[in-house]
Length: 467
Image (cartoon, rainbow, N blue to C red; front, side, top):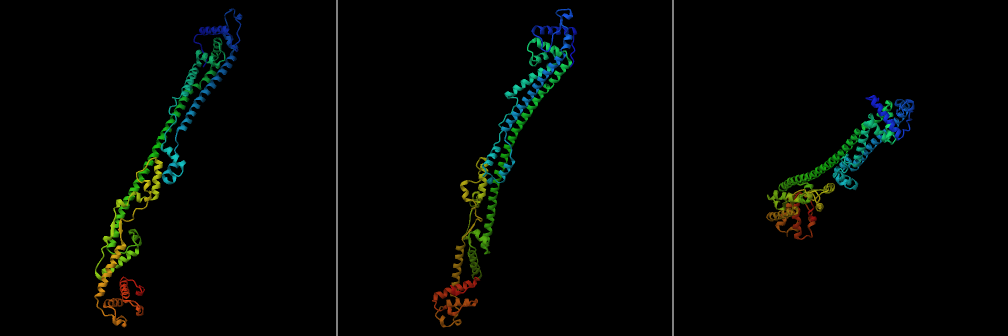
């Protein structure tokens, strides 16, 4: 900005005072003094001539001061930016970063995940995420220092267009320490529009420093708030997924228990109906009952003959037992080993015990029965067989059939009941070599004939003489 004095006489008076003060305290090294004798007045200094003579010195001083102002502005900006960088580094140290790969693997297969201690530690940090870094940029002690330096520097730079402001600036940066020399330097620069322009340009960066510091502060505090929000969100997300996983595990297990109980009740009713109706059971169904297929088949054959020949049946209900589904089928017995492993892993990840399965019950894993129905196949088959034997003996004893004509005199000594059983055997298509009976006593022959007759009715073809 060009220097235009408001009052030429007043301006001239100030110049004279400055020159006189400079003479009293020592002239500026760049400002040679003019001769007062040439003006006809011993106390008068030709300021116009003086200023013209020192024009280049004013420019040099303005450039020197402008350079120092530029360095000062750069230093302040650098220090402000450095403080922001330090704050950002502290934010980074206090934040907990999200690792979705770790989180997803933890919930995809918890039992496998917890085998890696490093992964577990990483997961727990996210589960308990809490931001521990700084939150307020302007509450820092070093912020107060840089803010004060910038404020003072900006205020000094604003005075570049005033004598007082230039004097303060020259006092700090001009290199001349006495009042007179500072006053003379200010006179030289103030009178030179070009020199004043140099200082004005050098002062412009200071106008941006306050805004830059605010920008650094805003960015730092925004980053701190984001880090804190991120930690809170991360902790909430991980714990939310943990709650979901825990609840889902318990819900799925309870659902399996209930559906298995319902299925077991239905299966027990179906098997009981088949047993009562003398239906053939599959090998799998016999296994569910804890009976061998052969024992079930024998029972059914005995019951078939009893019904067909004698119109009788063996009640199987006394040989059946039904267990309480709530007692027989529980989470502890229905759960598989992998269920116990999954719950244990979830407990490790959650840092708490779950109320669904307990480690001391793990030995019961997979022991839940497939059916609530128990059946004593051997006992019922034995009862049916004994009943059939008794009925056969009664029937054979009362036949009164003379079967001796079928054989030679070897059989004349046997009782009619035995001969009747032989007759029944022969009538059913049974054959045997008569020579095979030689050497047998009466009891052996009777036992053989009766067994052969029974097997024939049961549909089993066998050589009776192998008994």
